[in-house]
Length: 384
Image 1: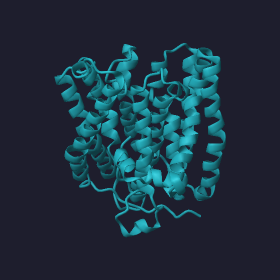
Image 2 (image 1 turned 120 degrees about the vertical axis):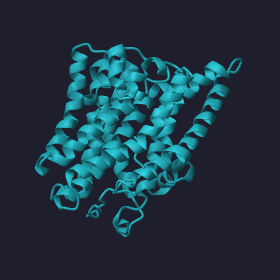
Image 3 (image 1 turned 30 degrees about the vertical axis):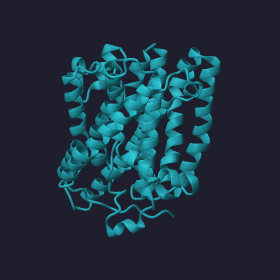
Image 4 (image 1 turned 60 degrees about the vertical axis):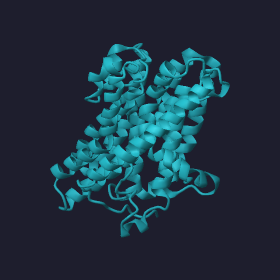
């Protein structure tokens, strides 16, 4: 949910001139959109009519998943081809991947757990043993409750679980098995959700399971394969068609699930929206990521490349991590006698301040240290 430097996105090397302009900047802009959608879900009350018309929280997390699937798969494919060309062995590639993931994600996460436990914010102290090994989603499924300040951690756990499994698959699968593996992952998610509905599972049991997230993660991974052209000989020739069809199919499906829930209620949500809505989002967001990769033009391009938007995207991991706990603490300690929106405004100020401090003095230094464990960078083939 937070990759800031990838072999594909790096702009520092001479090879980067062949990479799409605006690649990293506009993807950071997408991160800003994703984290804003999540904050809206948690902070804007349902009494605001437009809040109830769009699933902001689900959309924000699924956009992060598509981005992660795309960027992480790009990194792992670079390392795979370095292994195949004899530039690096698999054990080194795997070790460097995991070490860089740890340096990027763990420091801020563990600091959050430490401070949240010490201050007894929400349910952090009572559940911390699930979070330390990134098993938050499993703990919540078994507990069955939506707990303050920590429920959002399920998605970070899913991403870590994905990174571990995906690294082994992308580095060790036969090349001809990569696309079938990704395709199976994408199909498995809606099938799993449909099965969960049929068996009467709770929403949390369905949504927080990693299998349920594989369509969004997998669509990002498939885009990474099609972007490159070195996994399958004709991959790049299929790319534009794939991206176009993703939007043509995904957008109407997404609208149907949104409108259907408003008109038909809970029965429609369980029987139709839960199985297919996230797959529809996966398709729409795959189009969005693909377009941002080559660079949106016009007003959209200016928005995604706006320095403030990009900065929010750079800090999105910490914003996502901190914002529910900050709001909980503000309501508990500071907001006596305040109306709702001043509480939100103060929470936003504290969240952004903490996110900036986290990035400047913890995340970025740790990320720079992680670069000692070098990736082998490769340039994807230019678009045809």
